[in-house]
Image (cartoon, rainbow, N blue to C red):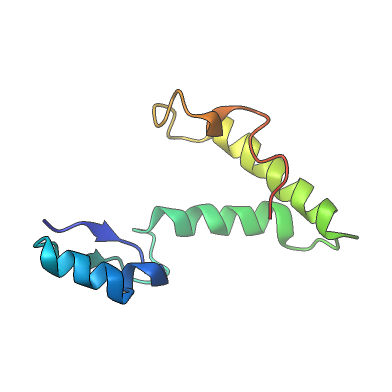
Length: 98
């Protein structure tokens, strides 16, 4: 089996490598900061719409901006059939980020 992973550091931990060796699994990694890694696109949009050019007066204000964007994005994203029944689709999800 060849699962494709992003370069998140936990994917290369000793425990993960040992489990992969025991279960005949070879992890394949996406290039760092690549358009192939979908989460990088999401983080870029998050930075652009909620953090760039802002001067939040508090962490709570910044959390509110991030949470508002995530709620909007979860309801209006291009992937509409993914996790249809998941709580992540509800408007009250992530009311407090970080």
